[in-house]
Amino acid sequence: MISSWRKRRAGKRAGKEQARNENGEMELSIPRDFRCPISLDLMKDPVTLSSGITYDRPNIEKWIEAGNFTCPLTNRVLRSLEPIPNHIIRKKIQDWCVENRSHGIERIPTPRVPVSSMEVSEILSKIDVACKKQDGSRCLDLVAKVKSLAKESERNKRCIVSNGTGNVLSEAFAAFSMAAFDENVSVLEEILSALVIMFPLDGEAKGFLGSASAMHCLIRFLSSGDLSRRRNAVLALKELVSSMEDQRKILNQLSEMEGAIEALLKLIKSPICSTSTKASLTIIYHMITSYGNEKQVGNKLVNLGIVPLLLEMLVDAERGMCEKALGVLDGIFDTEQGREMACKNALTMPVLVKKILRVSTMATEFSVSILWKLCKNEKKEDGGVLIEALQVGAFQKLLLLLQLGCVEKTKDRVSDLLKMLNPYRSKIECVDPIDHFKGLKRPF
Image (tube, rainbow, N blue to C red):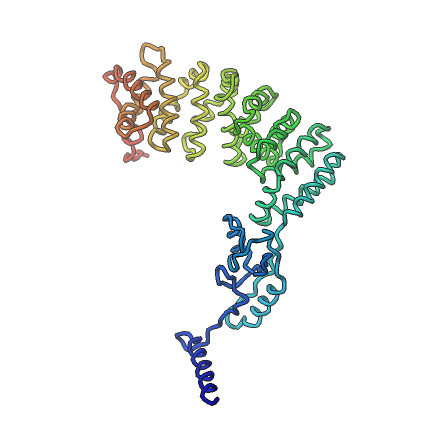
């Protein structure tokens, strides 16, 4: 008996010695019940599964999102995938943190309980009822609540989106858009700002948002002076035209709506943010390349001054903006009016040649395509744009591109361009202004 007591005492002494760190100070060990079974770290948001085991919320949610429907510890199939907050364990952990603050332990904050699928469904049902009653005030409050919950955490946003909120909000926007615009402008604005958070939308939601009344409301928001409305409207239109479902119908509606093209161009002339500018360029690109009335839209854009606007933008545009602007110009230059405007602008050739092999593969392909269209349609006996292209080093750039390799369509156009440029090479001195003058200093 004395021997066993001595063994227990020796074991306790050994445990205490092992708990000391290199400096001889006692190390604080986290109680087992406070550790997450997955990460073995102190739990900050303990939740319990239907199996009765408690985990830290971020860890168990990653486990479930990975497609696992069993408890990691017991391997039992979970009856419910909704973890329940364990307030008792969380309170004990907080008390333990306070007791050991002398060891540098900070008290974990009380986490916000994330929204559940049931709560989301209840809110959406109330929004549906408010729409049927045309109760704009009630609907506005409910939509504001949805938006607030979605912004609280990424987990909330995923839960809200996965429960079909995009469809309900799109239907609500279409319903209120059929009534007097001035009376419902506040609720329409709130719904639209919440919808932007729910992107991408599915086909059903886009069907509601693409209705004639909803489209008219989007254009009115796009043409308004409010920056937030304009941004949300252009993002919603981009979401609509980027889908192949009913794309031609949407683009046709958009091109025929009064003030739509002018409002889109205004976002490029007086940008709100890069996101809205890119969205506007994307919509315009689809309008001039994806449906049967491209030339009419292209000519209208040329008359509104899009060619010099985009050429000036390209001088110092970042990659994404540059690709989209070049894509729009490539579509615009399918029209004779667009090509004529480009030939009159001194920036055209220097900017296009500069973008070859400087930005991205897509930018290079668009630049070559534009050069090919301009040079192919040149009718002046003195060479016109062909001489300009040679003067800024197009021949050398194209030769280099051919050596480095490119897709077949671009390769064919590069070959055509070299054949068109070659007869004029003897008439001028070819200079690449970018590389040639890189080391020169101005005399003043």
